Image (cartoon, rainbow, N blue to C red; front, side):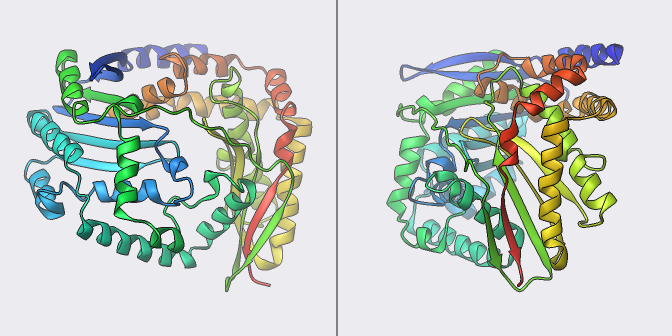
Length: 428
């Protein structure tokens, strides 16, 4: 195992050569994550804006997602069709999306067309299609999507769980918005969101491919010059419900859709994060062989699949999972989830489970670093979480050395995951 770890680390040392640079624009020093990779004649540039995702919707649920959608409509001068035609003719891809905590604008193309791509990207930043026509088009599409979600029972169960566990915080709101929130939305709200969040003081550039460092920094500076200075803002931290609750939503369904969650008190930069990854794998995220799958599907046949994972974010952290089962098995399944989690905390894991988890996590690591985008995103994740570059590689060594006692001591130190809340879509 140690030789295998060493081989992977050497391999990653060759592949992972991303560095943290910076450029100064309008008096603001903007971080630039750069990696050269001339394996293929391609290049990509992504603008990431911190604390600018759905968590900033506040009382206007769906605002960040709406802003991302309208930015995908191209420039006001060329319009949606005209802008898309320019990109298509040059095999240039531009996509805007939002996460919970961040907002992303991504450009990719062949190396020979990258300069043109940067030009179109700059046009988009300086002249977004904030027109009445594009606003009404996106509004119509969003309303249609929300209407379709009325029959998506997984979505309903998950949303109701968020409302239950994060009541009174932005996390409880659906990222797409609601009929009510979108009806009250105005074009001026979208423009205000863009002007407040798509700014230099929140920006991080992630760029790489068949580009020399000087080229990459010049392209980064060209794109950033289209942004206003703006203001940064500290990302808020939200705690989940610290007690057990249950909510049921009645629908015309033949299955019970069961979503569950509980607090998990650990920050993204904690020294024990690597232990949580191993614990999460064994409890519910490792597929067949994980505790939840083994007990609920294999031994009892109560569900086709059962899943659970520990999620660590800067704004919140939690344990969550889901399963589907027959209506008549609903109560047994809920009871069994509680028992599995309780036994996991009380008794920990076995030596065999730990060894299997190590083999999978370490063995599959190269697959998570095959592409340039995977490696750049990995480096951004380290930077964003306040970790040193290369930290995730070092975690492999820590996982390899992890003892059974260390892992079980860690698991028993987090009894809060027993405070499970459930959201069930069912039929009486």
